[in-house]
Image (cartoon, rainbow, N blue to C red; front, side, top):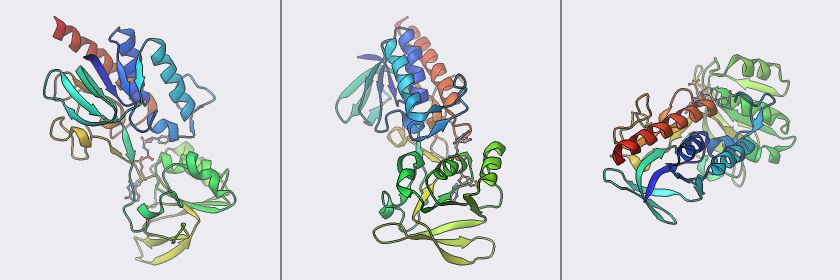
Length: 305
Ligand code: NAP
């Protein structure tokens, strides 16, 4: 029987682990399939305090993990597939084992949103990508497209200019959502071009991506645009499917918490991107992870008392 199980190993889960371990709760972290979460597919994190020169996403995960383990957190590589949370102890069914726990911290994060157009799923790994750090290298001196107008699209688009001959950012509006600093960098970069007011209707190609069918949403014009790869950065979908019907979710599927990271079920807390549709930063995820662990500690003390 565990005191606290933490689901997810991104900044939220591992910050919760550091706090829970230091409170002698002997936490166990179940990593999920993407160890380290989304920071590990981020090339460089420049806005996390304490890293004035920036830090690689993978390196950040390793540092967080090392710190959690130093205080005794146990990290298990496994993936929970079902959860019974309306009983005490709660039961988690993972691929490799079952866990009984008095409390639970959900830090399962979110996954990249897909375009949902023909050709996209078939071409994943053949030119459709959601990770510039993973796949950018394969497109040395070749033209690529990026879809999206937020920080991710611009950040990753800028990263892709290290490899690609040209990076065309395709955005559905004529204004970017991204921060001004990234906008300025992108506008100044000679390898970056923009196509405004345009959506992708189809990914073209048989064995590999050869282009995109685009539609200008203002003029209605449809045309084919040749590129060798498309990198999609259009937001995220929270990983909450296994909690449906138990934990309260909002309309977009994010877990509803109060300011103390409590969910509608006593003893179940949520932190990081799985409960945050707005800020979604490593730093805010880490902060909510710390809160969730402190609240779990209080909950367990009351349970014992
Ligand atoms: P985001 O801010 O939600 O932006 C998503 C972008 O994709 C928006 O421009 C949106 O268009 C577009 N989009 C959404 N659905 C679409 C669809 N079906 N078809 C075409 N376009 C679509 O997501 P994000 O860029 O991944 O950023 C997530 C969070 O991480 C943000 O808080 C961001 O600040 C943060 N982040 C920060 C950094 C950094 O500071 N360096 C780097 C990466 C991410 P509209 O604009 O029209 O809605």
